[in-house]
Image (cartoon, rainbow, N blue to C red):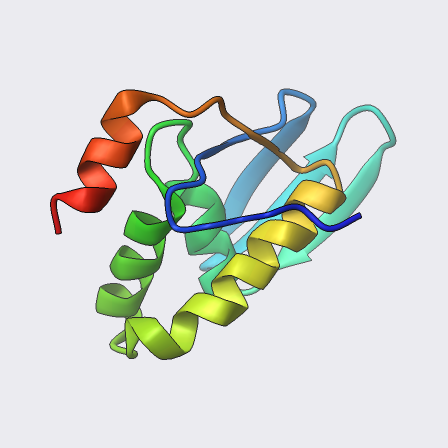
Length: 107
């Protein structure tokens, strides 16, 4: 299933998913299935930044700054990763709030 994910999309972690960061890499545990998943450093940082408030665009900008890469080059990969996380049921899309669009269009 493909979801339309844009820079103003906002996500939260699924309530059945717990995570820990160990040596810079994330370990996700899905309580409903008992599945354990690992994330690399960038994936872990993205998962930590998902907070039900921050639009995807801001997450991408933070990652670009933190990992010293061009945000335009990073954006397609990160939006695709959001898609993977959403399709896997590890994150959920939050309803759009006026503050999300305001933050996006301020730039």
